Length: 116
Length: 114
Image (cartoon, rainbow over all chains, first blue to last red; front, side):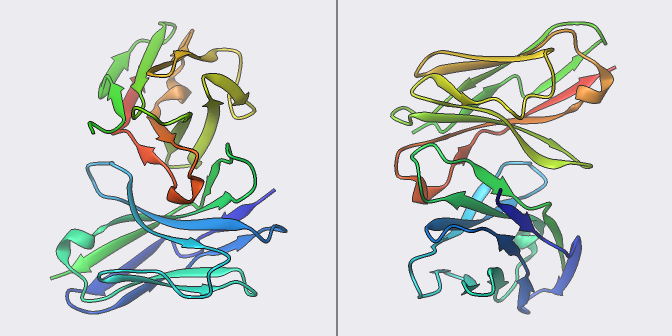
């Protein structure tokens, strides 16, 4: 079974600075997808960024980028120019690339606070 | 696109009562997922459907929990009888066959059983 590990329960960053959130996963598959979700206090789950395992290029969405290391099974999220609105819980998630019904497996999440 | 719609947003009930949570997925999405979120256990998949058919219900904690999807636009999660340990946020999410896009989540139902 696939597992997703987020070992840091909390992190803090100064506004306008850069922060990196760590995630590792365990799988025997070669085809899969990885995601970062943001959950602000409103509790809405918001998709931040996704990465296809077959792509070597790291995904980027504005101030959010990932460092995908397939061999190391590592998938970290970098937030540049942190803003107060980035304060939230962030979840790393894995989805198998085989089968149209594959489920998302989530890590425990990390709470990010942003200091003004 | 109205997104995934869940109701109610909050539910407070007494122990032993029946609780029904509702979900309307995004039109055209063929997969629907029910998750439960607690501080202790994080996000747990309870059950998911594909084309209205339950595919994996191994996450359903016990017989008190049941889920149905009578058509492509509606699903329910029922707890009968409810217990205080069922208190959590319950999310519904839907997805289409392009699974590289992850899920779209509803706003969740916060259930409190007293």
